[in-house]
Length: 451
Image (tube, rainbow, N blue to C red):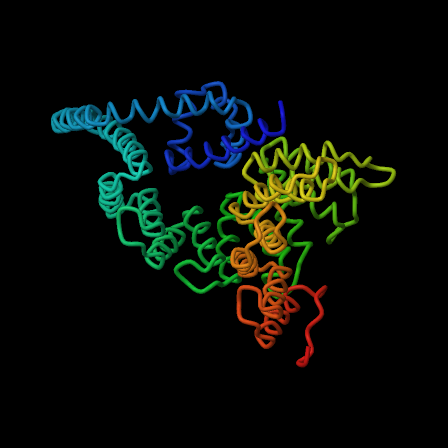
């Protein structure tokens, strides 16, 4: 397969991932699709696999065109049978109501069947809403409101998601957070997880890493291993006022031993860098490989980095394997892998130099919230690499990466103010950006007042 054909397949997989998430809002509806159309893949799903890992398993073990064909078949079938399904549901609900009025025991059994049918209808409404049907989204909100009022925790969480995203109702992240926190207070681990995520990102409330850590702690203690990983990352980033690698190690190891592969990847990173523990490249490699094979895109990227740099006497440098793991990480949806592929292509490291393709991979990384990818897109537009010199676009990408906390991007914004590229020349503003970069990363020298 040529590099152009390979890139085309990568693009198709990325588009399929977007379409899968639009068609199946939650993991239950995605699982149902896989059971119906890719039964052999669905049998390989485990309880510890999150949505991303299951998507990766589907996308990497089937040809993109086969997945697209089945997805279009599902969408077409759903559109044809929607009205008939509603009529069947109405008839079934009426039948169950009559039976439940006659016999108490049968009423209980029938009630259970009605509940299952309601959940099935819920999934169909989700599918309809995911295809941007305003009616479907509005009806889904009403369904959630009714069921939440009856005390159904899953539907309360669903209602919160609708408020958070603004589907079928006015966008209201503050209301979403209130519902998440209420569900957390009832002992719902997902409610705690979502509350922590809202505080971490500053959605519906000012950013509060301490509060995020408290909610992640509750969900981790409740057995939600993905939140143990999030807690480990917070300790690794210093959310409690200082970096605490030992606590990060504890939570990564807990998740890893419970079969959560991202925990193994986080543990591998600590061994790789020798953070809070004796550096051990062999152990790092083992953990990265385990996590990568389990569907963790960051672990695949880190394996690529090990092969790109090599380790004397332990791991031979192998740029072909580095590129292969970067590409795999990117195919799995990891922005960091896409950015790393861009670096190899732009600089001709182990691959033929191709700035046009490098820009494509940088943009993929940026779209997947990898700040370095956004910064690198800015560099390409500022320098004209890839055939597109555009200072305005460069500035916007730098600012986006800076807003995400990438120090080099903040420094680059400062340089644009200093040179007067796209923005008016302003040394005071440039120094402010230099100081911001300096506060984020000690590698940058804080400017003098008279720079």
